[in-house]
Length: 153
Ligand SMILES: [Mg+2]
Image (cartoon, rainbow, N blue to C red; front, side, top):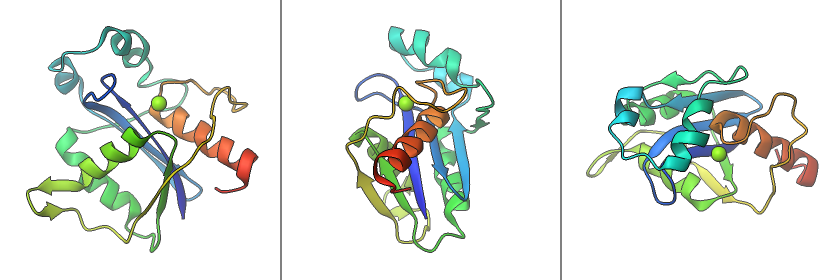
């Protein structure tokens, strides 16, 4: 099954803030708790343009400490024998991979996973209610763009 991926993070190279996967079979939208986000040295642009949009237009995140993201992703993918995750920016894939690592030498058990980095423009999107810089809406917009442009997902 195909899933589009989007992450919001604390500026270029910055810490993960939220992560979303959107697929035909379902969606996962995770966000770190405010206590964790407040402890980051947040980039002003992120503070202004990302933080206010974490819970908008029906995109309600499951709030979890970052260390619990891996288990949540594991649970989300557990019934999929061949998941394929598509992103349009390398850091999204980096953050997803980082979430799967539990400790040195230990990762969550997930099915064989395929990653794809694709050249596609998600915005502007014709999805009703879509809001850019919200990870779930960005993942939905990417999936929509892939459907329109390539019939991929
Ligand atoms: Mg985004």
